[in-house]
Each structure stands twice: as C-alpha cells, then as structure tokens.
Length: 564
Image 1 (spheres, rainbow, N blue to C red):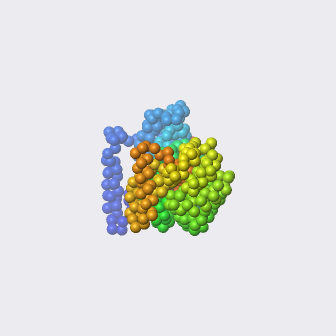
Image 2: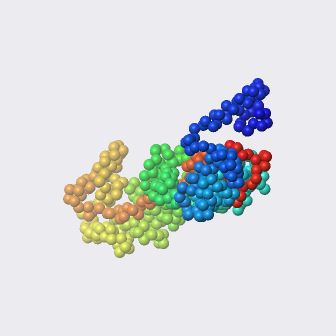
Image 3: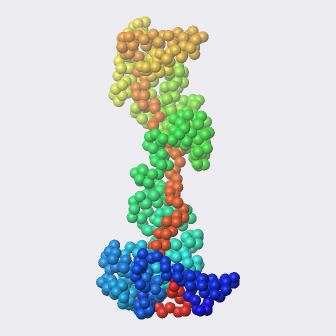
C-alpha cells in the first residue's frame, strides 16, 4: 500500500519515518479505531458492503457515518414533537431507513421532522451533518455551516452570506458581526429581526457600541416584562417607575426616588443625597463639598443660587423650587424690608423677617416690614392675617388700642385664632391704664413662640449672655416672672398670641427638584461578550439553516469530505 492509497486518518508525512513505519502506524491507528468502545455499537456487527452501498443513496458514506446517522434517526423517531406532530411520510421514511432500506428522500424527511422539533435537535443534526461531511447541503449552506462551526473561512463576502429570507431571525448576521468583533458590520435591516430574541447580554453589547439606541425602542419587542424594564432603564430611564426599578433591582434609581419622596435614602454620610439633604435644610457649610458630587450643570446652578443671595434676586426657575427655600433663606440676610409681591418665596421671607425682628426686639425693622406686607393686598389671606396680627401687636406695645382693635377686626372673620387677641385688647380698653399689665408677650421677649416649653433654658442662656447689662437683665427677669405666674395660674389670656399659625412662617418640606441630578441610564448588568450568549446565537443561526437541506443528496466529487 502506497501513501497515496492510504485513507485520510489524520496522518501527516514525517521525513524521519520509513515507508514501513508509516504503514505500521496507519495499521495501528486503524486497529485502535476499530477497538474504540462504543456503547451504542458494542456487540453489534458493522454494516456490510451491500448496506454501505444502499446508504450512499441517502448521501451517507462510511461505516462510522452510518452508525451516527442511525443513532440520530432513532432519536428523532422516538422523541415526541414539541410544537406539533411530524408528517407521517417523514417519520415513515426515517423508519424505513432504520430498517435497512435507506432512501434518497432522507434529507427531506429529516428536514420535515426537524421543523416540529426544538432548536437543540436541529443543532444536533446540523452538527452531525458537518462532522460526517454528509452532502445534504447546498454549497452555500455548507460554507455557512462551516463558518458557524468555526471550521471554515472566517470571512464571507456579502454576496455569499445568507439572504434575509434564509437568515430569518438575523442570527447569522449577528454571529458574523460578533465573530469579527465589529458590530458596525451588522446590517441595519437585520435589527428588526434580531431585537425580539437576541440574548440580553448581546443587546447590552449593541447598546454599548451605540448600535441600539432609545429610538429603536427594543423594550417594545421583548415579551418578558423584566427585560422590558431593564432595557428602558438602560436606554430611556425617564420611562421607568418605582415599581419597575424595584423589580430589576435598580438601587441608584430607588435611592433617588426615596430622596424625592422624603424618605430615608439609606446612604452614608458624605454621599450625594446626604449632602443634598443637609444643604436644603439650610446647612451652608456643605455647599463646597456638594459641588464635588454634583454634575457640572448643577454645580453652576448651585453657584447661581449662592450669587442670588447677595441681592435677594433669583431666577424664576429657582424661586419656583420650594425645596430650595430653606437654603436660600440661610444664604440671604435682608438689609431692608423685603418686598413680598416679588414671589411666593419673598412673601414667606417677609413674614419671617417681621417675626424675627419682633423676637429680637428690633421694633423699627419689624414695623417697616409689616407695613410693606400690608401694602400687598393681593397676597395669601392667611399670610395677610399674620401681618395684620403683627401690626396689632406693635400697636398694642405703643398702647394704640384703637389701632390694634381695627387690625384684629379685619382678620377675626377668616382667622378664628385671632379672637383671644381681640378679647385681650377689649379688656385692656376697659382697664385703667395704671392697672394694665405689661403689653408685651414674655415668650416673644425671650425670642420664642407663645407657650414654648423650652423657655427656661432660653432664659438662662440670655441671662448669661447679658449678665453685664442691667436693663436687659431686668427685661428678661420680668418676662420670666410673668411666665411663671401664668403657669401657676394656668392662665395665659393676658399674652398676645403670635403667631396665629406657625405653618405660615415655615418653609415647605419639598425636594429640591432643580438640584437633584437627573436619572442616569442604568449600568449594564450582564457580562460583556458572554460565551453562553454566543452559543445561543450560534444555535439560532444553525436552526435557521434548516431550509437549506436538499430533497436529495448531492453526488460528492473527489474534493468532498466523506470521512469524519
């Protein structure tokens, strides 16, 4: 036997081997192959020459190929269909081939059976076709299958790749692009076929490459709700709600939403939402640190807020954000009476300015601010009621009882809390001047709201502060004695009630929407270039090649591979 006559068993010529050694090596290889244990064929004689010739009609060449095809056909016959019953003629053809009468219609029968089987069965069959070199495929089909099995050429011209009708799911085009590590080669027309089924990790690869964008709306093509929410989070985070974020475990979104809803974000000190909360509560010491964690656009806005505090002028967008009012108030120290008509924030700031001036004993500034507010007749009636009440208190301090009576009469109809003050003024009018108690509210003299429970500590702090000022000490002592007497008698009717409603002086509890960073797209949660995803794409592509099976086997030429 010459070297040229030897079957192709993987032997390569070796210059160091003699002709006898080469023949002996081939014989040893043949003996090892024949003695290889095989659970399916042990104890069973191989097909004889007559049977091998009959199998050639079905395009199966060689004893090894016959054994493997028989095992495959047995599996196809015995396995129940997952999507419908296979045609009787196809199953009959498979059984006839198994009974020793192979037919040329075998490839067509296998194709008909596989049309009702899962993709894995198709992949198994196509893999066997590839390994055994069965001439059941078109020349193009053979090239495509070898490309998918990575045993053929890596590059195919665009003309020789499957058409859209052959690559029904776009899997081959996607596999080709991923194999070349260049998603830009993926035809745009294939996206509509790929997006409904491609593995989620592959979609992430396409998103990272900029090939799939929000405009593609891939979430509308996916049947799984969780995948829909995930793709929205990656491409259109503004479309995600809290329920969806919880379903996909998007913690960044949930932390932001908890902050907006006024809930505990669960973050650590020094993190974004901790610093942001402290800032909007009026802690100006964190503003510089906050700039390091805010996006650039919001850093500029924060600086504009600080610049506006120099004059009390802010942009309409900032003034409309009620969550910023505490911070703006902490940054701003009005040098004169505030004009309440400028905005809703300025109206609250004007009330607070008048109230703070009363509590600090700066009656001149308080009168100027109250007067400015009373000119603002278009304001909130409840805020106006507070201004008229403060006006009545200032008149009471001046013993202008008629002025106090007029001010209180204006508001008692809309603010019932003003009735005790009106009664106080009327009693005072009917009391001789020398018998009247001091007109001030002792709590206000201590800088506290009426009936505050912390007045004793406040009194002690002020006494230490003004220990060397006799006049101030006398005023504080008088206030302390009047409060003690009222508590002993449980009668506070001689104290002018101010404010009537503390909520009118409070800034709203609202999130600072103009300082909260926008929702950023969710980072990918899948592994890039996952081998499992690549295998799934390959299986899909191989299944798409099923229609390339011929109705009858081709006659192999001398270049066709017929051995394993």
